Amino acid sequence: MAERRRSWAEPFKIKMVELLKTTTPEARRHAIEQAGWNTFLLRSEDVYIDLLTDSGVSAMSDRQWAGMMRGDEAYAGSANFYHLRDTVEEIYSYRHTVPTHQGRGAEHLVSKLLIKPGDFVPGNMYFTTTRLHQELAGGAFVDVIIDNAHDPADPHPFKGNIDLEKLEALRARVGAERIPYVSLATAVNMAGGQPVSMANLRALRAWCDEHGIPIVHDMTRVAENAFFIQQREAGYRDRQVRDIVHEICALTEIATMSAKKDALVNIGGFLAMNDPDLYRRACDLVVVYEGLHTYGGLAGRDMEAMAIGIRESVDDNHIRARVGQVEYLGALLDRAGVPIVKPVGGHAVFLDARRILPHIPQHQFPAQALAAAIYLDSGVRSMERGAVSAGRDKETGENYMPSLELVRLTIPRRVYTQAHMDVVAESVIEVAGNAGQILGLRFAYEPEQLRFFLGRFEPVSPA
Ligand code: F0G
Image 1 (cartoon, rainbow, N blue to C red):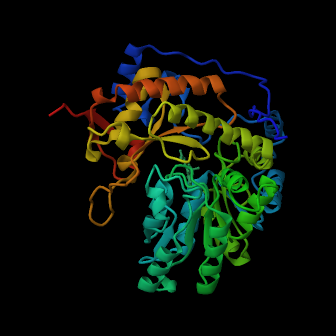
Image 2: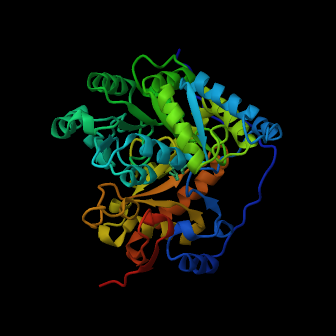
Image 3: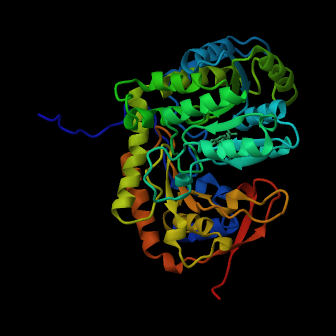
């Protein structure tokens, strides 16, 4: 007899709560105008359910809080650093760890250490800060993700995979000596939180070995990627997420981590590697930009919470419920006919703003307008991931026009309940149903770098 299907439930109970504030339509209209139609510029006090990001917004466990009290706040050689370093080696396989204040601190260091002006850095879709640090170091990012990733409706189970033919074409064109590394992200954020398969990773490893090119692994959401391998890839059904995480990491030799995501902390990150010589050079650089190599801009207590969070993050029960909650929200929207990126990814549900707002041309930023409209409807905060985030080409000054024009409903870990997901779905369904009323936007102020953070907009009157 087939086993009865059961729902997932949160593998924790709640010990402390933070009261939410509801907002009125008038207050929301005032707030979004003050914020220049940019959800990044809203005050969190004016937000009801905050799905801006999954970064630094997780709820820590009682064990992590207890760890905070065991902070060894020594300038040099903190006990918490050694705990973190040993945990990274045990769970992720990397032998050397350089703490950084967050992910982009590690991206800054690795880009400076490995990229020379004129280099090309291939990767499975860009991430905003990652690409910017590659460019600031003199490199040019080249997207080598499979074409399926650019189509929101394509159900491919591993839309994060690298297209090895694209990679080989780049090598044939510029030569291996101008490719300092392959920038490989697991659970590719901008593609919709889409995983890379182990088979693809092994093929990439073989290609890199053949050409003497290292892999820099953006492991920010590696546990979520490992969960999808367990669920979708032949031969992994009976393997624990923890083992799969280790196997992924062991196929790469350098990693950057924003511990604010997978690793369940509010601040922190690291650069990790196996090569002792690269480690020594990274230590020389971290003291310039972040802090001594045994704290890298973090308090001892932050490193302790991170070490404990890493262990919790690779637990099967944790990750099943985490991704289960994201899939739950995705299924509510999908059933109601709201166009979303499929399959639903690990950290967020992405709305396809192109299809929801066909009347707004991409240069009037439909995803930015949709995020503002959802906020106006219910106080739910989401984020644009489309043309505004993509920015401009450094050489030509032209706007990038990415094929994906998305709004991200990002789910913090262990923070909201299923009822919150119901409320979010109701609001998005309502807004999508009345989408014809939404106006496009234009920049009122456009920052030079990472313009999505601080840019301001104004509605464009209908022609
Ligand atoms: N890499 C990926 C894949 C990320 O998603 C992020 C941050 C970073 C690197 C940079 O890390 O923020 O710690 O400096 N993503 C956040 C987000 C900001 O909302 O997606 P950081």
